[in-house]
Amino acid sequence: MITSGAQHAISLCAQLLLTPGDSVAVENPGYRAAGHAFALAGARLHGVPVDNEGMRCAELEQADCRLAYVTPSHQYPTGVVMSLARRLELLAWAERHQSWIVEDDYDGEYRYSGSPLAPLAALEQSGRVLYVGTFGKVAFPALRLGYLVLPEQLVRPFSQRKAVDMRHTEIGVQAVMAQFIASGHFQRHIRRMRRAALSRRNALLDNWPADIAGCAAMPRVVAGLHVMVKVDSVAREQALIAKARSVGVEMNALSDYWLPDSSEPVDNRAGLVLGFAAVPEVEIADALNRLRKAWSE
Image 1: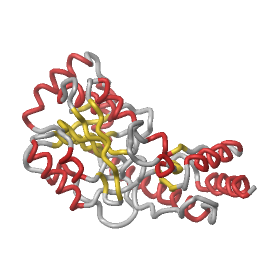
Image 2: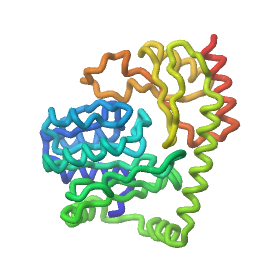
Image 3: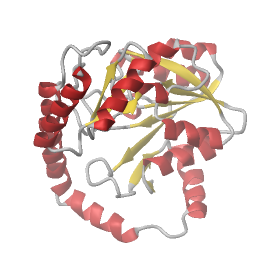
Image 4: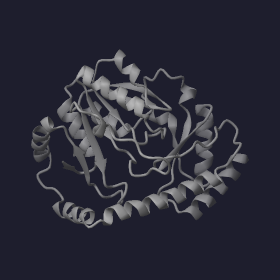
């Protein structure tokens, strides 16, 4: 099903799969806009911690969740790629409890090393996964064009709901994109975009300031268009971000992506979240040089 971007697809899932009072498992920290969509549908958000293999699926057994929302290709904001073992564990949970999984293929086109793991939607056989994708990440962000791959039993109700929500769709844009894909231009464009993103990632890794007090080392960035660096306290996180902004460098606070009722100690939630896709390599190097000076003062 074609949608007006990934957020529209997530909203449809929230509207059609949930009833008020249902619990939804979300990655914590995680993508805030998805949580808002589920909350608007009357759901209660159940934050599940994320480790270096992705969402800790074992903790789902302690909650009666109707749905789990995950970003396995490149978790936002931590940047973790969900392991195969964890993917299989999540699928087993959904089948065992007859729950739904909304798989948001966030940054799935951008992998820089190793072979990509199969999506949950390709691994499962019980019809419990809804796969969300978007063309905005590889074309341009203003392109509100996405898609939703549905289990067969959900195609009709989702189509009916979409028809009510959107009586007029951008048929022209869809036709152009369809031709772009059919002619082979889309795959070539993805390869060009991946090379550009890899070059910008390398510029970030090569020029990142080292030995900043309270700031962890830059992690490996094997996928995606952003990186997260841990910091030892929220106070230091806020101070580093303020100094960065004073020299024209924008970054987000990891602490902003946690649910308010998180049990994780406050200072353990601190970190820096940086996107690098939209900045040319020369500008990245210049920005990080300014950042190094600001943080060293």
